[in-house]
Image 1 (cartoon, helix red, strand yellow):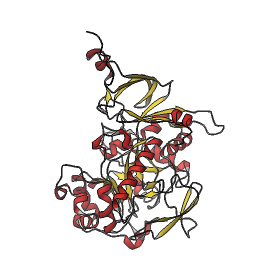
Image 2 (image 1 turned 45 degrees about the horizontal axis):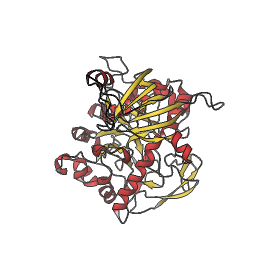
Image 3 (image 1 turned 120 degrees about the vertical axis):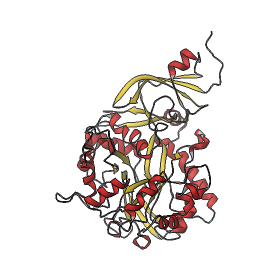
Image 4 (image 1 turned 45 degrees about the vertical axis):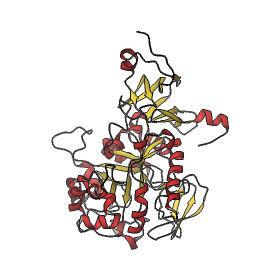
Length: 454
């Protein structure tokens, strides 16, 4: 039987490349389909079904990684998710524009984050931030995996930049439904086959009855994260036992590590008595690390990774000032409109009028990866795992995301390994191409020829 050679099957073969597989870079080909949006099993496609690809692309030895997953993004390119517009159809348009720009940085999926705000704001914006990948349109860019609500059930003593006037304590799940809108966090109330908009909630477990509420949130498919908290080691351990599986920006806005009470950090040292394998996460939560060199000292980042590599997730906590020049910009922080200002000077974002209150970051996720590579001595696959397989596992979106295995979504980042090209910078990765659902959506070489930038 002859091989099928008719054009238009949407299949592309990427060859002469190193694939991220577990802890290794493996020389292999990878086949993707823009028709199904999936990674194909190349041997069965070629030998069993006798199908040839539409196109074969020689990647010249470059690295192929699963698409990056960003778990804490407050906004970018001038748009903040914690914003109510007079015309909310414009809000949806701004989200779409952000998605198309974000994917060019290698982020193919993300969790849009809304900070501590009023109930009115949550109910306005959340319908626009739910999972968006069901249409599987590559040109839409990065897809939302559901919203992350960072507040307002936070400890006022660890508020960071959050407005203490809107912070609350919860006594029952009804308090969360009233704050966020029941249809946004309760599938039974939503009355639709579509997933609810909310994927993750950050809260201080020591306040009110939050620890007792965690099991109900988990039953609804919502990830519970500990953050902005004064929790002791015992309180944090109780939250993990109740079902909290994530820590929001470890070390920042929480009780510091103390030798007689290790606080939240201590739960990373709670070993599973039945399994000493670090890949087992049944007793230790995942945790986010902002590797911008501002939120944490590089040595602190390395300590966290060494404590629990399988739970290590790199995040940016980036604000809408990403991609904007230095200056002072408005921000909605607990009001119905822009009521605070953030000053950007280089990579540093500070709440206006403060010399030390950090207001998120303006770093890209790949920059966090490169920083971590330089600071930790980790291998490239280990560093990339922190923005691919590990966040996918935390969010419960494996095997569709965070993997290069056959059947996974064909979300790929092709990376240049620029080791040694910049003196003193050590190992550095750069985005060469981005593929979404099996279609190429960004090519640095092509855009450089056209005179365009990321």
